[in-house]
Length: 192
Picture 1 (spheres, rainbow, N blue to C red):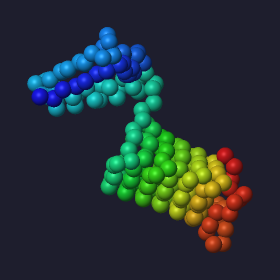
Picture 2 (spheres, rainbow, N blue to C red):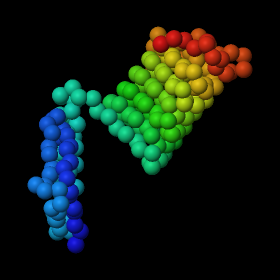
Picture 3 (cartoon, rainbow, N blue to C red):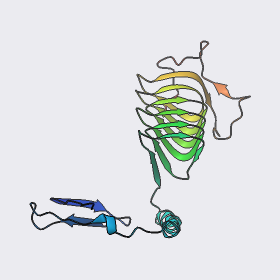
């Protein structure tokens, strides 16, 4: 028999912004429920609900956000219309609206997004209108960008190409801010 014990109160937020309060009347009371006999939703029912929830988020204008947590490694390409936060590892290409690479994350593949914020490690071509390399970033890449910001402490090795259309820019004919040895030199980044 599986038991669940609830002491105190917990507040959670439902999908439409209303708060739901789970609580018991007295902190020392226990709520017990046998989960081994609880019915689980069928796969078909849960699959049908997922597209509807996605449509509700898009219809309400709320941004969608996907998180790849620190214990997850993905081998293969990732594509999303919303925001993606990577705290784990990805071996493959990423295409999304906004990408944040966490401090302990690693991406080994090409990135295409409107905006890319890097705090961790990236190896591959980055194509974005706006690229921000924060102080803990370690980037070995060719970056195509409209705006590039590199914070003090960030490590960037590779080339930087300024373009009015970085998402579709060709390698030939682009302007590079690379120094002779291919390394970023402090104070020479294009301001965001």
